Length: 271
Image (cartoon, rainbow, N blue to C red; front, side, top):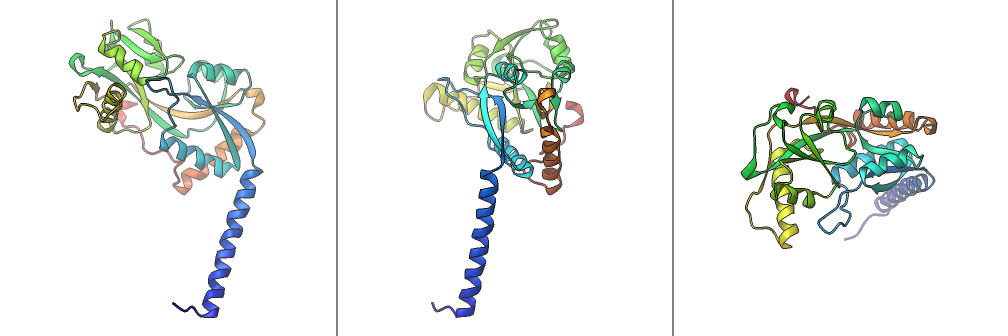
């Protein structure tokens, strides 16, 4: 197909302009301020690190780009991540506010929200409408994690907690052998049915190495334990304006309707 010279010249100019913009963006990113971000690790049944969920990556990329920063993400067991932030290693991401944490850290605006769900063995499920329904039970939690002020206040008071690492296959096995009555898991998606299906599928695959046997072994109770806003946080004396820069970026991503925007508002019954 023949192309006229003016049309070809116009196309070439547009291409060069696009390449120039892309090149400038690359140079800008390459020279962006690098910021260390500490996050919780999640492990598979062989204790290999699982990748971050796509929605988490999208939100981090959106804030990173809007802030003109370059995130160096380091993943640790959650309790160690909090200790390392207190020791000055960087910022932590994925943290919710508690009275004790507000005394130790400076927080950004909320980036997104996480839902805390109770998972049980389907053959040993129970009704749940409030924390009082957990009386006398043993609940598996990830060490160092907050699941809301009411839940935290009643831990090892109204009910017993079993501290776990962030390895869901290992935690689910504790349910099957009745070492725990339920475990609490966080999800950034409010679709309980989809999370339940994924949980069963992943556990089956971890045991068989295939697609699973199709039997639903784990049930997620209909009412969440809590809905928690998720933030960046840093030791106050190390802030030096980074939280302000992140807040500006978080606000910009919400205004633009980018992946940095909170995907939903929590339902009233879950607050």
